[in-house]
Image (cartoon, rainbow, N blue to C red; front, side, top):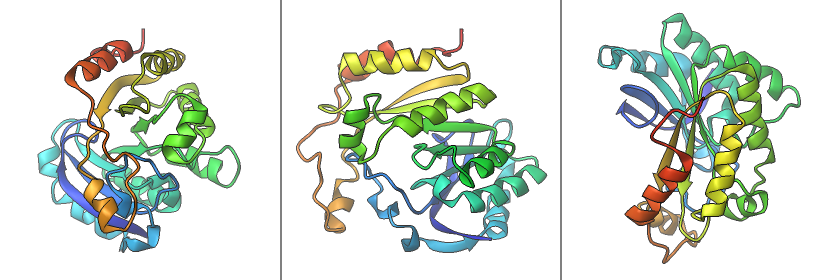
Amino acid sequence: MKGFIHSTESFGSVDGPGVRFVIFMSGCPMRCQFCHNPDTWNMTDGEQRSVDELLQQALRYRSYWRDGGGITVSGGEPLMQIDFLLELFRKAKEHGIHTTIDTSGAPFTREEPFFGKFNELMGYTDLLLLDIKHIDEAQHRILTGQSNNNILDMAEYLSKIGKPVWIRHVLVPQRNDYDGYLRDLRKFIDTLDNVEKVEILPYHTLGEYKWKELGYDYPLAGIEPPSAERIENANRILETGCKVNK
């Protein structure tokens, strides 16, 4: 089994608990205006690598993981290559490795064959980092090019099956950094029973040069990162300093 891989990181510290080997997969159905990795959008631009090759590479760093570390698969959007992910996590579990998926949830559907594969994958997955880009459906379409209906459905399904989730939210001025939207997101999170953590990821402009190199017009040109006050405000509304479950 081979997948299209954009890159790897040996000592990831922000993609799940502990020190992690992070696999960035190629291919993404979204076109987020704030994306800092537009070079991951096209799946076939990645390098084809096998499950066994990546697993062996990851295992070289196992001594650094200690308690809580492991493998995180990010992107791009890893669920676009769900067959590859299934085999990778199944074999990772044979080695007792903690597994995490960093996902936007965009490919999620309850239709087959995806839904059956997704349920099997959850049996090998310890944690999901679920990026909710915008709580408002119409604004989500503007920000990402896609609806968020199936993404919120995925969040609700993960709650139903009790799969641990960290909610991540990229805070973007003039897009989702409004108190009303933040409160609505908080209300949605309060309906879930499986959220262990909520994280604010402040928008930054570090990926703008990649858009230009690829010949794309950068849609957020001129928009500065959120101020410290707005970040603090979002953290307060979303209660990021404490676990969500009551």
